[in-house]
Image 1 (cartoon, rainbow, N blue to C red):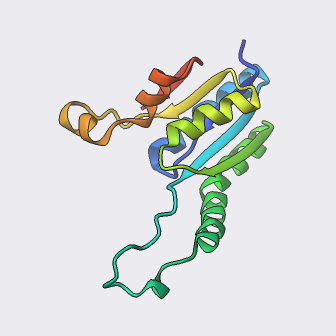
Image 2: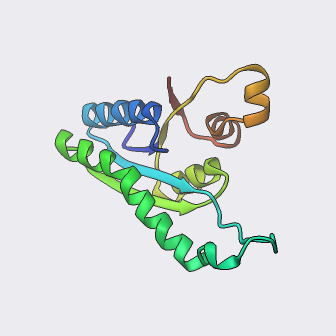
Length: 147
């Protein structure tokens, strides 16, 4: 059925539920697992009123992003190892996580995406948008949504 599952991780408790579901599914199907974490893009300071030395350079931001990604992805690594599931990790800098999820799924040959949804409705969903909804809308893979 599914041989390579991508799970999107954002460090939230809800994302932890998606990780648990993805690991159980990967274990049951003897599937490979890829974890993805997106860090927002670097925005250089533009306000002349704020001293620039307080902001990291783009290179420093990217180093900090890698450290952050490692911390956020660590629980996935540990849980997958404990379950005997092979896991590959990927992080990228993109202010639109859905793009990174779809791009990584395509590049890695994933055949299922597992991700959490906060279940926002109405005005909240309209204003905040939903990365899960964007993956469903723009992607062509099956998506298991965990709530």
